Length: 205
Image (cartoon, rainbow, N blue to C red; front, side):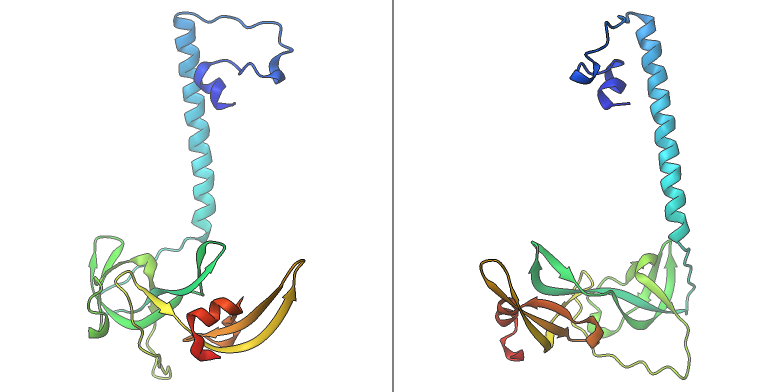
């Protein structure tokens, strides 16, 4: 039913309901009883909708648990300095580490042993920001150190220009360049406006 009908117990007098001859007036206890029945029906339907949405989310959710001494990767967010459609763009999620878990805080948080380079960041993280790492002697972990901010983001800078195209619109021409970002493979290169990239990093030209 519509919110108006749920609140007032009758349909809104819109042109859709003008063909109805009349409305039965509700007074006294009858109105209170019907209103209570409608409220119960709304709560039942809302509970059914919440249960249905929860079942959809549970299919994609997996429980993660760690113990002290486990090695994990920490999720950070690379941020570009390019404004696209009024919002800051993001590259693919990135993990740094591995780091050792010192202790478990509550049921969903863990204290991590962080290096001195990012010692300014609070060392307790939610389980959603962690990814399990199984140590293996054959693994060669080599990554550049990042300037991580307090909110676990770092500024992503362009590395080189891979390709360049010119698109012709109705009244003007737009030059796009394919940019490979630092700390990312060439497969993750993105198309950006040439003038914006010139203002952000003129040294890559």
